[in-house]
Every structure is written in structure tokens, then in C-alpha cells.
Image 1 (tube, rainbow, N blue to C red):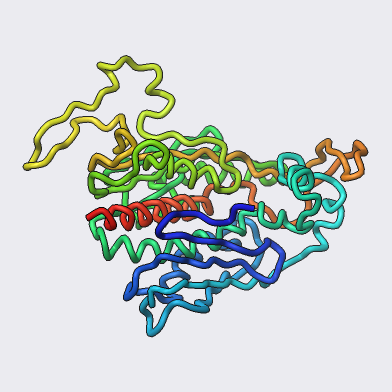
Image 2: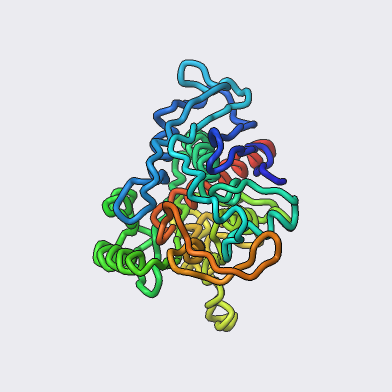
Length: 359
């Protein structure tokens, strides 16, 4: 099972949704980088359950403990291990699901691959696994602040179901995004989205949506040609997140409907540096950052567990029905925002360190 990500800044996550805890081991963090439990906790609090009326009510503090690699608030240059204990496991909610495959979950595919699976909460397929990624992302952000303090990574909810937010990637701020429980920079759309999630949840159903992310201040030259193109690394990072079903950067699929003259980004010398007068490339050309804002979008499917009966089969091959139980998000998007921006931080941190080895 592949549980590691990155090249120089490399992380390995561990733990199951209803096991003893979730964590991450980080290798490749330079020495003397500020790393504290408070820094990590700030990011974990953005993704934890029970934080608002529209997310799963599972009560987890997601309290981070640094086990190694840090002394007096500074990294030692050795592996950093971070652990978050699970506090509110309810495996009894999954008794029926232990023998009935949940539609659109990984139950059947894990059985098909391994012949065994964690029966409670989806195990490693649960979004709870992302605790390790977000904790590592907090450390990656500290390294980015040290190596390239001009870089800013922001993500927000672009759409939920058929409701679109109107957010300017060039000017949106973290305070605007975090000012509402949806995590979007459009307060008018936020209210509509909240009502939609409540309505869908009352029906025992779920909805999906799109998270958009901008990386501002990225220097030109990041990314490795051919197989480790920057957009390819971002795509892998985002598509490795639970419930993701699509990735596009810059003009994305809409660019396929344009001509070359419509899509090309003209170059101009502006304030002594090479700039583009449009940004349909999304800040990356030939797999390498060009110094413009990197803009991409990630599509998340509706939450698979719904509280209405669905057709399924048992592990012994019998047709049956299953109705969801337990505590689940009717929409993953508000908690997916910190997953997206911290995965982007992992990619940028790794490529900054890779570029540093070339200088």
C-alpha cells in the first residue's frame, strides 16, 4: 500500500479512521525551521469534524503531539513524527456494513485487493487519513515561509451542487474565506450553500462541489519536465484525496473549445520581468512555473454514505439493501478546503527544496 508522498520533502501517513490514532512521519525537513504543536494545530482545527452545524458531528479534538524531530520549537533535520489520537470511535455503527458493501465506498475494492479491510469507518480510505497530510502541510508551510516568503496558498469552495461562488483569485484573502462555515470568499453564495446543505441533509442525501486554489507569488522555474511536471504533481496530490473526481488547471477543459490565438498567453516585459498579459495556462507552462498565479480546481463527489436505502451486495455475494448509519458529512467541501491547500503546500515545498539542490 502506497502511503508515502514527495521526493526530498517526503511524508508517510499511518492509521485508520477507528483505530488508535492517525499520524505522519516527515522526512527531509531542513533544520532550524519553526515547528510547534500550535502551528500544526491551527491547520488541523480547520479540517476537524464537529466544527460547525453543517459537518459531521463526530467529536474529535484532533490534538497533535510531536513525538520526534523537534527541540525547543525548531526542527532538528531528523524525521518528525506527529500523532493524533482518535477519541470518539463508534465501531458499533458499522456492524451491518461489515458484511454489506457500502455503494461508492472502497469496501469492495479493498476486499478484492487485500482480502481483508478495516471494517469500521473505511480504515485508510476514510477522509480521517488526511489528518497526517494536513499536519505535514503545516510544516511544509513553515519551510515555504523560510525559502520563499512571497508565496501564498489559498483555497476556497468554488461551488456546491449547482450554486457557484464568485471569488477573485487575485484578491481574495484568508480572512474572507474563513469568515463563513462554508469557506468561500463569496458571502452571498455562502448563505445559499449553507441552506442547500441543510436541505439535502434533511432528506438523508448528500452533495458535492468544487474547491478552487490559487498559489500567488510562486517564482518561475519550479517543476521538473516530463514526468514530474508541476501540474502533474499537483494533480496527483489532489486526486489522492478522498472523494476527488476531477482536476483542472488554468483554462482546464474550457480551453479545449478555444483556438490557439484565443488561448495563448502573450508575453510582455513589465517592471523589468517577463510576464504574461493573460493566464489561461494557469501559471505553469511546460510543467514549470512561469511566475504568474497558479490556479487550479478540484471536483469532489457527493458523500457516499447517505441515509436512504440503496442496493448493494454482501461479502458473501447476496443481493441486499443498505441504509447509511453513523455520523457523516452531507457535503465534504468545507473540510476539503484545508486538505487542498495543504496538499498544495506539500508539492510546493518539495519542489522548492528540489530547486534549491540545483542552485
